[in-house]
Structure formats: C-alpha cells, structure tokens
Length: 201
Ligand SMILES: Nc1ncnc2c1ncn2[C@@H]1O[C@H](COP(=O)(O)OP(=O)(O)OP(=O)(O)O)[C@@H](O)[C@H]1O
Ligand SMILES: [Mg+2]
Image (cartoon, rainbow, N blue to C red):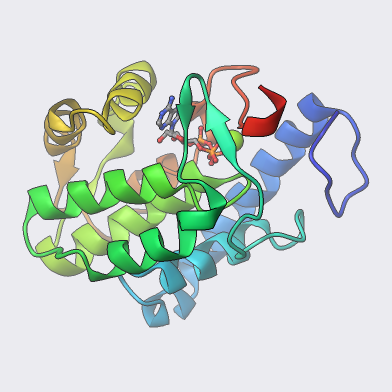
C-alpha cells in the first residue's frame, strides 16, 4: 500500500505522518546549518541535494531522479524518457526577474523529478532562487493552501494565477525561520491526494 521506504512502514497514512515529521526536522536542520549555501541555486543538482537532505532517512530514492512515470489528478508529469532533457533545459532557464523565476518553478513542477516529496523540496528550491536573485522569499503563511494547489494545477496551462498568488506573499524577511518553515509543511496536499504511477491509472 505505502511507498517502499527505509522505515518498514506499510500503512500509507502512517508513512505520511512519519514522513512529514522527519522532513520537518530535517528542514530545520538544513536551515540552521550552512550546507544549503553551497547548493547550486536554480539547478536540478541543488534541488536533488535539498531532496536528499530531507528524505534520506526515509527513501532510497532521496535525491535521485525517478524511474517511473507519475501523475496527479489528470496531470501526467514529464515522462521518464524525457526527464533528463527537461532538467537540462530547466537548468538553463533564466532567473533574473520574478516572472522568470516563477516560470522556472512551474517547469520544475511539470518535471516532478522525484517519486515523492517534490512539493516540499521545490518550494525550498524556489525560495533559495528568490532569496539570491531578488532578496525576497515567499511567506508561505500568506498562501492559502487550496489557492496554491489550484494555481499549481492550472500552472502548466497558464501561470498567471501562481504568479499573482506568490507575488502577493513575497517578503524581505529572508532570514525569518517561521516564514521559511511554513513552506515545508506537507499540509499543502489534500488528504489522500496521492501521486500515482501513470501505469496504475
Ligand atoms: N494536478 C496537478 N498538476 C500539476 N502540479 C500539481 C498537481 N497537483 C499537485 N501539484 C504540485 O505537486 C506538488 C506535490 O508534489 P509531491 O506530492 O511530490 O510533493 P510533496 O512534498 O509530497 O507534497 P506537498 O507539496 O503537498 O507538500 C504540489 O505542491 C503542487 O505544486
Ligand atoms: Mg506528496
């Protein structure tokens, strides 16, 4: 039932709970250490390091690009066979303006490079780009979770909603831990709103 994991948990609800707790603890650790400063900003390699840091105790695939096709709702993320090409393309995307950064974030979400934990790791990745390039971050406390999900579902077709939503939540409090931590909340998903292997649909 549950995704294969290092903790030997078979129940998916329990795995979700344990995974959320561990990834939050790891996120605090990441924030309080300086390691994150060495991560490549706006590159897949940097995102992979964030993902590995958050999920290494839980999944063998932490920090590794997925090897199965996945979907959420009606949306199929980039097929495995094109994933490497897509990630190279995203690495090369510009990130000097707010719009460029969100467009890059949207493309990384469409790639969904990991089997699980894309949302949490990519929100940190986004904040690191915004922080470096614009000296701003998203105050995720100001982002209504349902609005965020609707905007992300819509983003592969039209990115105006996510651009407006996140722009209204920008803050220059870039060193504020509360601001940063909220983005790691796994609470952005609806209960039972899982990622599926496309082959299972
Ligand atoms: N239908 C959809 N189409 C495109 N993107 C989606 C869709 N549904 C969700 N997303 C994006 O996928 C993310 C969730 O991906 P995933 O489950 O791999 O990450 P997570 O860290 O476990 O979850 P969360 O972001 O909910 O904390 C959401 O945050 C959202 O950005
Ligand atoms: Mg998830």
